[in-house]
Amino acid sequence: MAPKGASEDLLGLLRVPLLWVAALSFFANLLLLAPALFMLQLFDRVLTSQSQDTLLLLLLGVGIALLLTLALDYLRSRLQGVAGNLVAESLSPRIAKIMLVQAAQRSGRERREGLRDVAALRQLFSAQGLLAVFDAPWVFVYVAVIWLAHPVLGVAALLSALLMLALAFANDRWTRRDIEQLQRRASEATRYFENSLQNAEVAQSLGMAGALIERWQVLNAAVTRLQGPTARRSVAMAALTRLVRQAVQVILQALGAYLVITGAGTPGVMVATTILLGRALAPIEQIVGSWRVLAEGRLALEHLRQLLGTAAEEVDAMPLPAPTGQLSAEGLVYRTEADRIILAGVSLRLAAGEALAIVGPSGAGKSTLLRLLIGIWKPSAGVVRLDQVDLSRWSRSEVGPWLGHVPQDVELFAGTVAENIARLQPVDADRVVRAAQRAGVHELILQLAEGYETAVDPAGALLSPGQRQRIALARALYGEPRLLILDEPNSNLDGAGELALAEALRALHGEVTVVLVTHRSTLMQHVDQAMVLEAGRVKHYGPLAEVLQAMQSGGAGGAARAQVVPMPGGSVAQRA
Image (tube, rainbow, N blue to C red; front, side, top):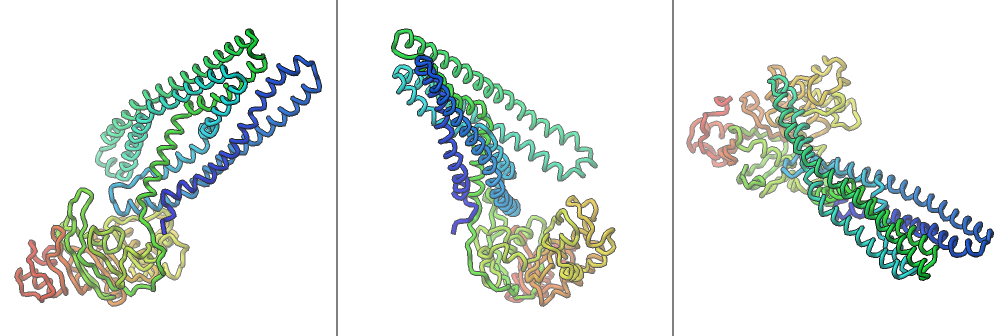
């Protein structure tokens, strides 16, 4: 089944409210024929017959028509705004989820402006220019009515409408590229500054703020340089469109007057056709005047369709039983979009409750392997299986509670310590405390200003890196995880924290499958297997004792399961 966030579903979401707006626009424009018909009857019937009853009847009819037009116009404007809110509320969670997935995958193709595109689409639904788009096709209806009044006036009205449409088309061709480039440069400048704020502490402490702002100003200056010409072109086209509309109305009035003078027409026809032409050309003028909002909304819609199109399909598979923790990987290969190979042919197998330590020099692909094992990245080739099930076929919402993960760069979320440990779900006090105790961080949390209710600053200003790392371990152990992935979990820990981590690993042995990256020998005694990676390839893999023996001997004396290729730098203990 196609995912709910597919681009076709976006069009379906927009189709229903837009059809309602189109239906109301049809009746509203139909009723707007009433003023022109009133003027026609006024000049050709009332003034000649001097009938007050006819005048009163015409006034009553046009009054009712205008009131109905007011009601319909109000309803379609309100419906347009409500539809914009509904579309934004429906799209925002989907777009946010896709952005989170792509940011976790670090594929390089994520659009960080996805939610801004949703806001631009909402703004489009609040713009009067969108209603003008629905009114614009009525130009041909009004021209047909004018043609029925007199063919000469009809030809003049048709030429005037085509001229206005040509101006609108020229405005699109003239400004589309500028608006797209302006949006792209503005997004680049905003994204650069937002990314810089994440490193504000370093920038401020090293005196880099001035250089950072100068670079941002350079990007912003490029936006300003584009903004000026784009604004001038838009304003010039809007002014030219207004001038042309007024000119063609004057010409049509003069032509109508000529027909009256020559006896080929009546004053009523002259006045009525002028009103109809003004009504026909007004939406086109409004579209040109609102072109930037319409163009930005169109670009936002296209961006959202592309973003929704990148979402991977989620198959509604039958729910699977809770995993035991058996983990295997077969021939894992991972290459970047630049075709750079990070991992090549990595395989491993862990029984439920076993622990594996992965070591190797920086850039060997250790963190990449962990991301593949937990399923947030997809391998270019090969497969990761949890309890013999391809991990990619397991929905994240279903498998997530059975996984624990402490990344290399630990980030906590805005909320309390308890909410972070509970993975932002409703706090179950017993489970939160149990997870903290298993991680050996319960006493540390109690020493905080407000204990488990201590507010967490996402930037980490209130908690040290070591405290954040230990709380992240408690978050990973929340619930009943069957697989625990740890990327250098002791990188920021002091002696007490490292002892607590070692005790947690000892207690988990045999219950939870653990894969950890470490460079310290203190954690190695709690693992069953070891793997050495170098340049994305396995240099040693097997039972811990055999791998250590093979590495120390530098020969082929290990068991058959261990790849006895010597690793520069000596043993794990020596590298630590």
